[in-house]
Image (cartoon, rainbow, N blue to C red):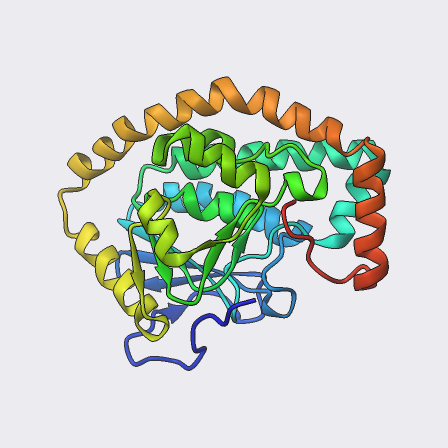
Length: 281
């Protein structure tokens, strides 16, 4: 996978609000909150602790009257590699766990799309599967030259249920959305911008500086005007989510019962020793 941001601290880096070993870091830079997926050894794969923390944090942010903008990024060389192998295999073997995971996936989409604050994705490295869905659900996407997007659900035998089927048709032609969702091909940074999945490509060492500068620019805008403009725009996406997600997530849930997915999950588990990240889940 492509390298991401240099992890060296910067003079203007936001101060920590939480210990650095937290699975999800929440840092404060004035009116901006920086959310960092912080499991770099696993390429920020969506383990249960990270998935749950990321789903819950939006409620705290939306209640914080001091916040005016949010930046979302990943620690290390990946934004997020998607679902993790142990969770992937457990979804095959444990029906109740599978249902719970799908409910959490729905909550995460609803919270990101429903957040009234502008959210900037600083995609520092590969954003795959659920990681890709998360990045593209943000309001503005800045992507590193070394990063790429990929929704590889179909490649591992799953219905692409938690993001791309909702948001991508608003950002690119339906034909292009079908091509990339059907094939799971990687979308390089420049292509992501051309398609409409990202706003602009940024040099890796400038990504966080540019994301923070933009976040502060948005934070200085009249709050009610900006927030309700976002809400009006996101009503399109929320309406699509209400229409599409119940079927898509139900179909993805059913996918876990297929022999193909069971074989893929066990193959991943054998290869990764139940510690790696499964792209596309």
